[in-house]
Amino acid sequence: MRTRAAPRTIYESGFIPIGGIDQWIAIQGRDATNPAILYLHGGPGEAQSPFLKLFLPWEQAFTVANWDQRGSGKTFGRNGSSTPAMTLDRLVDDALEVTQHVCDCLGKKKVILVGQSWGSFLGVHAIKRRPGLFHAFVGTGQVVSLESSIADRVRWVRQQATASGDEATLRALDEAAELPGDAKMKAENRITRKYALLPSDQKYSRIVQAFTGAAPFPTQGDVADWRAGAQFSGSKLEGIFSTNDRSGDLRSLGLDMPIPFFVIQGRDDHIASVEAAKTYVEDLRAPAKGFVVIDGGHWACFTDADEFVSALRRYVG
Image (cartoon, rainbow, N blue to C red):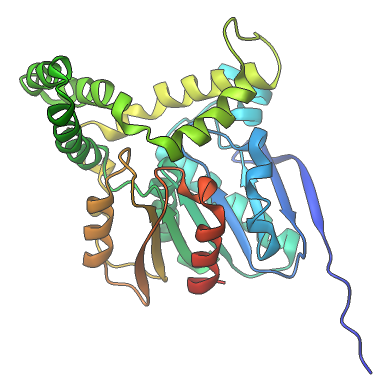
C-alpha cells in the first residue's frame, strides 16, 4: 500500500536581488505542493512583513508569498530614500521578477496573483504584461481609479453626514467641490476618510497601531522603516493617480483580460468603490470572471479571512 508523503511545510524569508536592488520576500505554507499565491500589498507602501500572522488562515490551502515592494517595509529599510526607479513601470517588472522567483522556488509554472487596494492596481498591470506567469488574478479592495473611488465615497459620506446632521462635513465637501482637478480630489479624500473606516476596517487599523505604537515613534528599526517606507512610496507614486494622467484608471489598459479574473470585495468598502469594481468586472472580457461580495470593508481579506479563503478555494483553488 502506497502512503502519501508528509506535507512539506515552508517558512522562508529574506532578501533577494530584484530589479537591481535587494528586496524582501517571505514564502509560507503548510504544504508547498498547495497552489501558490503571490500577494501584492496595498498602500503604496503598506508592507505586510510585520503582519504575516494574518495569512495563517490562507496557508491551510495555499502557499503564500509576501513581498515588501520597492520603497516599502524591509525593502525600504535595506535601500533607504536613495531607492531608485520608483515608477509604476519598474514596480510591474519587479512583480514579474518576484513571481518568477516564487515559481522557481516552489517548482511551479504559474501562481495565483492576489492584489489588495494599490496591489490590485499593480496586479492588473502585471497580468497584462506577462499573463503566462499566472493561473488567475484576484483583486480585493479593488481599485479601478482613485477618482471613481473618491466620487463614490463623497456620495456615501454626504448621505451619512446628512443623516447625522454633520453640517461641518457637508460645508467642507461643498467647498472642496469648487476646487480644480487634483486639489478637489485630495481635499475630498481628506474630508471623507474619517467616515470610511467602519468597524471591520478599524479592526485591521488596530493591528497596525499595535505594531507602530504611539508617538514619539522610533527612528530606527522595523517600525521606523515601515512608516518611512509608506511615506516615501506614497510621495513617489501619488502622481499616477492625477486627474490629468489616464494611466491611473485601469480602463486605460483595455477590457480584454488574458486570464481568469475575480474580485472579492468587502460589501462595506468605502475606501475603494464597490460599485466601480463591480461595473469594471461586468465590462471585462476574460476566460472566466466573477465579482464576489463578502462581509467586511477595505481589508476584508484579513478581517473576514475565513470567508475570503472560502471564496478563493471556490474560484481559484
